[in-house]
Length: 420
Image (cartoon, rainbow, N blue to C red):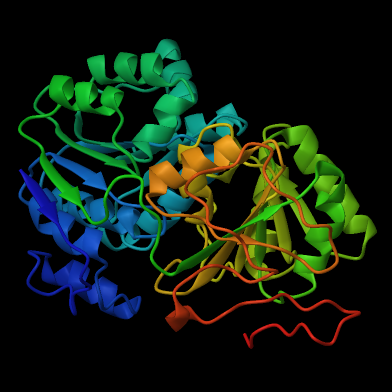
């Protein structure tokens, strides 16, 4: 069964949510459910299995947190939420912390890079909600410090990303120790074959909830591509950053590249921080919190570390390097235009990367506008990409209703940026 929706509904009332939780939502000023919340919550409250397809920033966490809290407040059992990264685990736990204390329900975050002793202390407090990354949870299972025999709800969040990161063996091992009569909810931005197989093996007649076709991007994101030589990327980046005053997220393909970009920005007066697998958990938390608070205007990240960057108000996403995995393009740019806001995603492609851009266009079923900057030589893809049209100087090809967009050059008064 499939349910699809693009509409925003006006209230959490009428979704089967208990009055006590509705009161909590009212106090937190959560008044209008997102489409994934509106479609998922009633089904999950009934105890049915769910496969939810939605992009990042659509409110997936609350879509499963509310049904879990309602179930645990009424009956025995515990919930396990598996996520791909430490940052996402912390974000998910923060959502539960807004509701769980009112019911006297404790949570524990089980992630690598954090103190094992502190995790053992949290586990001894008998938490009924476990938020974990697969690798560290398996470590605890092997030490017999975590038992899963009473798990009644299993959630796989960012399931496609967990499979991309090679966590399938750990996930399968974990599920073997969970009772077969559990409720299961899988959430993902895309539905690869492996997830379909997993659902068939571990779910009971799951209801498929899709609020946007798999592989699509948020509607409020303006996407553009610069064809630029690799040596010109640092200078173009600083030109673009001068035009944006809000938070900017930059993606590097490698952690070495992320370190280089960050150091270069710091030398040129920008307040920037980096987040990648070479950074310790405290360093990553400090960078993310600094980005949220405004201490850092710019956050430079790799794909692996970027999961969990749930920050409202990111004005610009820059793909300094195109992703190795085409599907990561969708995940990357989904960090902007969240919670109903508009956003912009700019990608740097070298002349040799025409096929990479073409593959992204196939995935998102949209032609990416090619734009130029007046301060840089005009470049073309070495191999022409059929899906692209002839580009116009520094003006994106988008419907007239959107209006042209240009970036202002400090030395050329002819170029003016649109008001922000």
